[in-house]
Image (cartoon, rainbow, N blue to C red):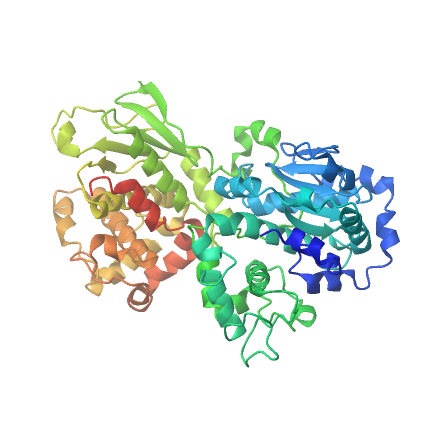
Length: 585
């Protein structure tokens, strides 16, 4: 979608360059003072804005080229690159505005601000499509620049780029809405997210987001109708905005409203968008919620504020004394480390503070697949409480929590004999904080292998990590909330613990408490996640299978899910599960 070109060709519509957000632009410009005031922003403004501005590992440079394109550089001589996506600006555009736009872009693309883009595929798509933000001091200067491009017959030079315009006068203005939130969202959506997730986000008829928009508008309208049906909450009426453009606008409104970006703006935007708060979007637009909270998409869950805070050197110099204030990185590259110094365990992969140890028989592919699923369980969604999740991550890291992986089963290593063939634990602080193994079974069906991985990762997460950090999950305390929740399930004949009674009869009370709690935790979490199909639920051990039943029958367990699980964990993607664990089929 090269809207830039169509606008250039239209001559009289130069002000709408790549802009499906004209109403926001007009609103931002209204009452913003003379354009000269913005254009003549002093060099002092440029010199004192570095502290607000750019992340050290991103680069800012005033450069004469964009991919050696001297023609573009003639009109837009300032350039900044964020992971290969360029923002170019006229000479009159204040540096502070360019830097602010760069920070907003960085926050959209690396929403957890860990220094790594959230989805490299989105970055690749933006780079491939040569997505570029073009900035000018204000709308007048932008129109003058476009007119010069037209008059000099240079339109063909711009054909291969995907442009989105943004004016300094509307970028982080005093006491007005920051339009960079909209325009940069448009750019990333059209040339990144929509390309990586076409079924959900393609800006065309039939995609999930288009269908959601049709519901929000009260019908399918290829052009702006004379009046919208009663009850419509998206009623954009710019006749220059076609169906595709309308989808772009709707996506921006719904997404940023869900992130809290439109709170308090109903008077300014209500004529075209009525769900200005997260609560209104949640209660009024379920189709949008289903898209934006789909963990497969990994869309931003925090609204950019123009202050991208990651600093590589700060992270590198952190000491152990600061660990409570650190954020453990989640999206780092998964790598296998071969290390013969950990007793029987010859290799491992580290994921967000959890070390996943593997016995030598286990394939590298399986080890990485387990690591990937654990990473997905820690992914962002709109329910995540970063502080709570960081508490869990830091506890796992500080207390050397680990997960073990073996091949086929315990009998393969004589684990049930007095003299097993493998050591219990890797050693070197990795000794106490673990639970059971995950077993690689190359000939298992998808449900068996995926179920094995999810179940035992959840055992480690809840029975070790949660139990160490959260008092309500302490399985040793029979008065803890998880015990009370389990007892409710047992009393209602929903959770059958009879198969574990022999453990208690042997006098292993501690083992009994740990096992029945971690099994119960696993059952109610996968029920809430909608994973009942993997275990053919209802199961003889756990007799409900839907979130509605959980809420109605086990309110205490549901409270635990809402207050902790939902704020720390994200269900893994079922499509990824099938691709990772369907080899036997």
